[in-house]
Image 1 (tube, chains in turn orange, green):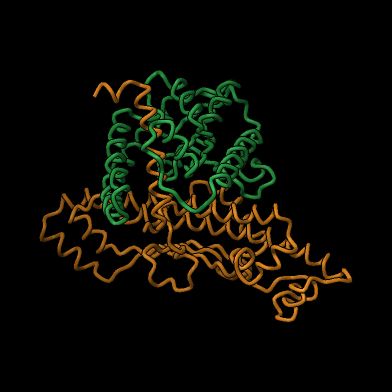
Image 2 (cartoon, one colour; image 1 turned 90 degrees about the horizontal axis):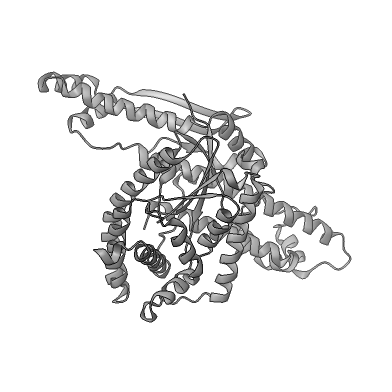
Amino acid sequence: MSSRAQKPLLLSKDFSKLFSPIRINADILEGDKPWALYEFASIFLPNMGPSIFNLLLDMERHSQKLIAAIKPEKRERLINGLEGVTVEIRYLIKDKGKELVALPINISPAEVLRNATLAKSGSRYTEKMQEEINQILVSFIKKEIQRRIKSMIESALKTLLVKPKMPAMLKKLLSLGLVDKEGRLAEGATIEDLILGRYAGLFKKVVPEELINEALMLKETIKACYGWEGEDYLSTANEALAEKGILEIVLGEMGKKDAR
Amino acid sequence: MINTRSLIYVPVLHTQKEASEILLSLKADAAPLSVDTSLAEQEKSVKEMWDGIREKIQNTSISCSTIRIYQDAMPVCGREKEIAEKLALKASHNHQLILELVKNGANLEGTEDPNLLIEEYDNLSQLTSKAAVSIQCYRDSLNEYKEKGAKLMKQRDTFIAERIKISLKEGETPLVFMGVRHELEKLLQSSFVINYIIYRLPFKKVRDIYNV
């Protein structure tokens, strides 16, 4: 299974096992802030991500050139001398003093030089880090979708709460404390809770069918866009069949296939 | 100097319904593997998805005549429009939308290296031939394909990125339709501000969010 189909690591609370150093505190991503922050970053810091990657890549590439010019004995001494030394760069976004997004980049020069000695091709940074950056963006998008759907449901609930005949499901949720007297959903309600979980019954009763379809499609779209491989054998088989079919038509049309 | 030109990126998904129509149009024995989801529902979703993408492209207010289209699996061969027409006839919503845009003045550009597409076709043929044998056989083959495919996909993406940079003219906006397996954006983000059009995100106007 592709890592893209796994639960985003960045949203877990245990960051210690992360390979890349980017962290996001999803718990405090609330309200309009994630999207506003995303927009701000898109407009004012469009190249922030690539710049950091380039910095790391340049460092690795440069170190490979340098290390090639040094005699093996001196190289070994240098690596040993740098053992345990770390260079730390911290990039932080805070919300009222609380850390919202953190990019604590920890560089171990000895490790970088050792990699350069082994002439490892490519970089350990690019794909994994880019993957996680993508997951951060997905988390922003998910949060925004959740906020909007939640807000629509809460406004529908407010209307229902003032009606003389309250739906039984709403009474039940009130008694369980999952909805308060002002129509607010319990803190931390997720898209899954709303569509498929503890609020699903209410969701179907009080929310227009169109919105349910919208929510389900959003969920599927995210799943499809960011975890296409998943474990769904039939989907991947059909995806491959569709691609093959398209290529068959394309190659047939340009006469290449028959000419081979 | 940082180039701040915008590029519109549309991730393309294939569904069982599309696979079915494309394959059935080729030959009768190539029917896709069936799943429980109703085809009618899928057809509705696919149509809605492409309607949504069409609307979002229209909302960008970019004049069609300044759009240059780059399409997944569209070879550089001088017959790009004919290929799009043929695929549009085979029920590909993606290509139907491309033809609409071309009719309104957009330019369709040959996007991919034909030789790499032939290689991809061969790999996919090997993979799909295993799908009919057994799930385990397919899974083994899928792992093999992923290894070969990743390298090939990088070559394809490198070619496409260069193609976009070379063929794009002054004042034009690239509109890129790419399958979700591509990672082209990684190669383009240093030259373009990439604006994603993803179906059904609850944005009122795409330009409000994507700054296009």
